[in-house]
Length: 338
Image (cartoon, rainbow, N blue to C red; front, side, top):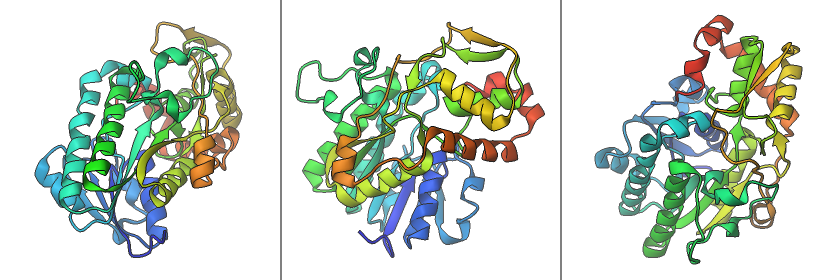
């Protein structure tokens, strides 16, 4: 697919992932519109391309905003959502539940406006939590809408994302819209905030927290996936998938929080004298990593960045864009708020 001249809407386009996607689409010649309420996204994230895009500010849960957003659009990348890291989604379940209304409004207005394709940014939180206590890579067919008991998502946020997937499947079936779904696994990178694990680790290092606090025992694992690998998966899914087949986007390596922290310490050239493990904090499932067979087969997609490379890139951005004293003074708030 050639993005040159394609009319593209990116909902949540001023967000961490969305802004990177917008930059890439502009570079490929697309005519991009961003729809964002700027509750967590920032206009400064779009500064490199602000003269080349259209920005619509508003709440996509309102019909008139959503309808205006997708008018005259060929492709929608739907990334807008109320979300955050583990501390946020555990503390604000009702906020996360509003994503179901948001998704429906975006899909319905897109269908009425004759949009050709929709790519939905879903989440690894759609996977059953009871199968993530041991190291077992998650394959897309481990979630089923056809089998009794085939779904057991991770907190309200995960259930809302799962319903977003099922709704998009229904719109694909009824309106013949080309649809794709990308289940994002633990994305990180420049522009992410401190409610997510990697940036939280960096914030504590920048503040030189000592003893250094790690939530849980540090042996819980995630497959931390660099933002540029996530955005390439989103574009490839929109280009190659039309039937709403879900596809994982994540590295297959299990990375413990302790390992991630050591990589952060190395990037900062700093190490705490002691580590305090906070086992009363929310940590989510024990282990999570993606089976990327389907992404390789359908998209030709493989991650390009190692965890060490991605963390080094992100630390460089973080140090340039954060004030050490401000982070130190507001650390507890930063870890929980969007």
